[in-house]
Image 1 (cartoon, rainbow, N blue to C red):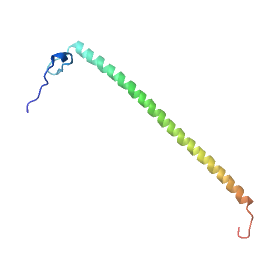
Image 2: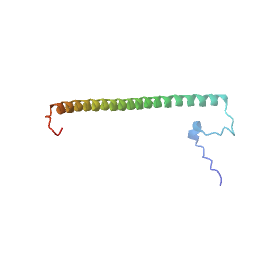
Image 3: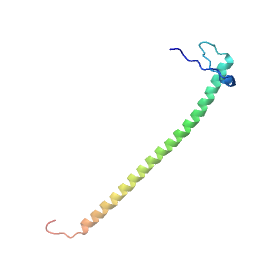
Image 4: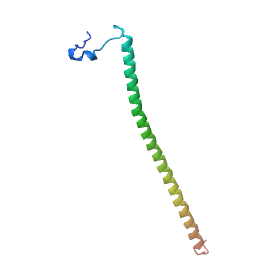
Length: 97
């Protein structure tokens, strides 16, 4: 099968694809590519950092919520246990007890 080579559009000559194996890049082109890649990396890393902060805060909030729930449950069970002790001591003693 023959490889299809995209037709070059004269209006898009600024975005012409080149094969670095066939056409060696000039130092200016290499510097430009590095600069563009660095800018893209910075932009993407800022987005990622924002997402990581949001995820961290969401996980932290979830952990604090679960911790608060467990404290409330423990407090409720302690109060219930105290009420049960009081009820047992106030209950009339019978011969069956």
